[in-house]
Image 1 (cartoon, rainbow, N blue to C red):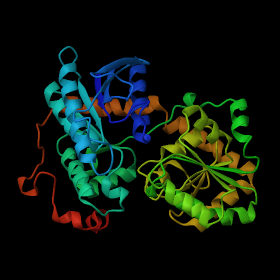
Image 2: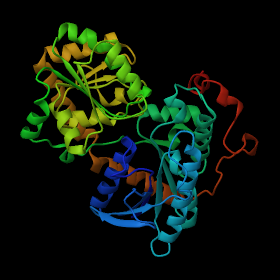
Image 3: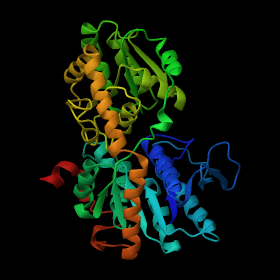
Image 4: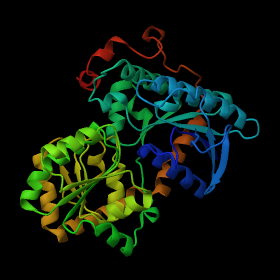
Length: 426
């Protein structure tokens, strides 16, 4: 099968789990015998024009966005995305001169307009994976005009495509609640992890551990409010009252970093918490493998790939019971779940994991077995292929499927001023 992926991130440009997902699924599809092209943004090092490379069998086409003078920040995000989608659309038309996909697969609202155009130009079905929603990130509220615009694009996109994929049952429920998509029209296919890519030698693990002789707690991910790092820092004094030399290492970057640093100073945790910033992949893997426990304290988490990555290297996992995390971690069997946002509950779980290393290792081994059974990329590739085949068999229904003109271009405006997740569910 000829498959075209559209993604705003792809290695080496990685902002979060979406880029890792697209990278892994593309390579798994090539390994299964498919012909795969990924259209994504160019790096700063790329020269003007499309930069084409073959990476482990995947043809990666990096395009420079239109309107390059528009910065990538919150204030200018809509303009940046407009330029990016314009560039993706034109790149797809150039691509189709000598190569035409049988399915076009887009990832999140960031490529929605280019996805619809490319699918129509190729006369191929459009598949959309929704990795997260704007309403979900804000606990159901739309706090700004930007948030309302993003929500509107998400709503619109679900009505333009031939198949919708969610990364967890939690995300499936969000999509149904927010966008009115029937539950049986949203296929749940989890993210995965490549255990081979996460192998860490004993020597690298030991080197990562040298700077932190005491019990090591690791957080890896974006430093944003919804990732819940503030809850973990809030729990550290209670953890250290029982485990006196426990040390927390935070690896990642994001807009909440300054607030988190101030929180550490207020709690006088300067010697107990280290901010490592962004780490190269090899160093990140070594840190997670060296940790006595990996904590995933997310307030909002559509899936929770960092919990999966920790499990893949055999590190015990303590995770919030939010979103997709509760589908990855089985409390009492493959790890610990605590009440999201509750630092006392988090501290109790971490202390228990550190106090009984043998029990922690048993849960970690169970988590590793579950990774192999449920979250291996060959299995995820097969499930995705089934969605593609069904969309191809059913044929394209045309644009504006189910669109009600009275709803406006991007959905029902008045509803955006309420809590969409709460009010739509009641």
